[in-house]
Amino acid sequence: MKTEKHWYDYLWIAELIYFGLGFFNILFAWAGLCMFFIPLILALAGWDKAYCNRYCGRGQLFALLGGRLKLSRYRDVPGWLRSRFFRYGFLLFFMAMFCNMLHVTWLVFSGAENLRQVVTILWVFKLPWQWAYSGAVTPWVAQFAFGFYSIMITSTVLGIISLLLWKSRSWCVYCPMGTMTQLICKAKHE
Amino acid sequence: MGQLSMKQKKHAVVNRKLCVACGSCQKVCPMEAILVYKGLYAKTDEARCIGCGRCVKECPASVITLEARHEN
Ligand code: SF4
Ligand code: SF4
Ligand code: SF4
Image 1 (cartoon, each protein chain N blue to C red):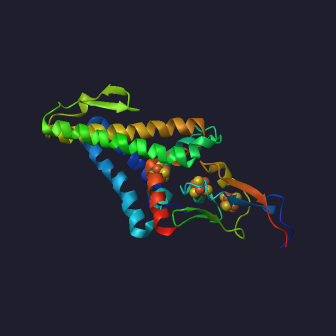
Image 2 (image 1 turned 90 degrees about the vertical axis):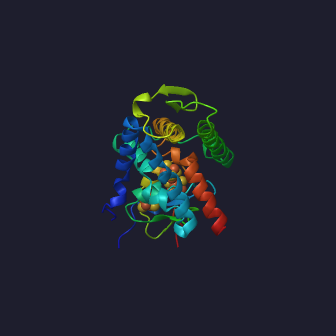
Image 3 (image 1 turned 45 degrees about the vertical axis):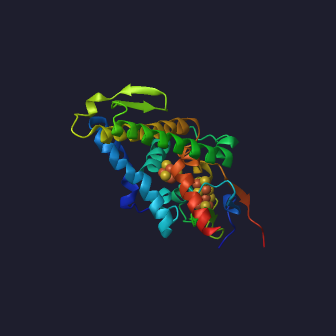
């Protein structure tokens, strides 16, 4: 029987620390780039979906919330959610929102717009977050941090809604990182 | 060995076309009987699977079913 735990089984703690630090100082949001690049680097370097299968703190956190804390109803996801159309469509939408965030960062960098100290949840709801920025860095660096943190919070909110509605890790069905790494593996092995 | 219990007469089968290769199944399998193959989909080892159904419950895409073993 498989029982032993590994260090990487505790990466959900890093996920919590990440959100905690970003609450007090938005510049820590930059560290989230690791969660963006490491899965892609691993997939391209021949580790396939090792990130999802072992190291993803977010997946572990959802599994804990849904399973150990029994927050999930353990219902099946609707068919459309696991269709390629939705998964690839959501990936495209997510990338478009990511590019929009980079564009806003560029506008602040070029001086065309002022820094907006808000965290935007689900691309619509803007929460004031000014306490997390002391003006210590050039504005575009902070703008990127606010934008990236917004993306991380948004995906976590979607993940929590998904685990409440369906299964613990239902977010993984349409998680853009998961879809992207699987696409890389398909391109390499099929 | 004696006869297989009712549960052990079943084993896990993955719908590879819909599997998202997330690895939730391999994390909960007590027998290491299901593994994500090359990041594409999960593959089961029929000989190791005891048909406990943990992976079926956990799979976020609900693409695993317990099916009757083929009698030889
Ligand atoms: S699909 Fe996304 S959330 Fe799930 S394990 Fe992979 S990277 Fe993490
Ligand atoms: S849990 Fe389901 S979707 Fe995830 S790898 Fe296993 S069979 Fe595939
Ligand atoms: S049914 Fe049980 S033993 Fe078989 S693959 Fe699933 S979790 Fe493992």
